[in-house]
Length: 145
Length: 260
Image (cartoon, rainbow over the protein chains, first blue to last red):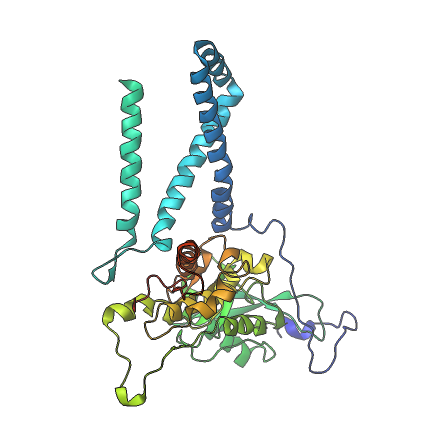
């Protein structure tokens, strides 16, 4: 016999005719922890914080460059701090994640039409990746030459 | 003898329960059986009290949406065999974020009210007389809205969207996609009327682009894309309002529509 027959009335529920009691589950504060897709979304949103940290660092770098060799040396000293190195490594991975996730989402937000047909998503995302690679290569060349 | 699989089904009786509980049923796994076939088998032969919605069993009516192992799915298109490995169980629950009426049946009034708010019908401004013949559209004009017109109102996208759960006033993916379906239609001039609900904090600006609605959509409607495209169009429209003389009718979020 199925288990449904074993159901017992727990207590008298508030019930009026033609107005059934709906069960309304509450959304947990940790709704994003259970599923990878949701966690990925939260990480993508969180990555903006690390983008901001990188921007602030670059602003400090520019300010140090403007203030002369002594300021630049103290900036470098600060960057050698193990905590800052760890923060920068974590930031780097989040920024890569940020770039990849948003490049991949761009075709959905901005579909491109040519000759009345929608271009495949990969062709819309590709220029962003190409531009990213070219700029990165240029910066590498600038730093390492 | 066919292989067997256990279905754990959420049961909720408003007269008896304060919250749902799970009951297990063992069903045979035939290669052509979907989860809906298993539910029908249970209702026919094991427990007639099991309650759920279904109709066409071919992915058109949008009635049989449920959570299958935590994923919003049309149960008529979800094969038992894809879960029947290594003694897996299948957990069937009502669609998430909707009030539960009984067992697997959800209450859809909230969605239907939101859907009506976006005016999902053609609103031609100057309807030509019938004697002029039918409205003709080029294949390109059809192509602009066809994807959004495939929606079957199954509400899987609502069950996938955390914003729907956290912010109950959010208009939601399907309703906005259907609004865009009409905004992009060359026969429609109602885009401006729809901005009141779409370009609103409860409209497209409620969306944080989680993208799950698009992933779970069984008809490949891409509601997330529709919402982001509307956001861009709404911003461009807002910017245009600064350069357009007052009182002049701007095209309102239809910059891409085929009748420009």
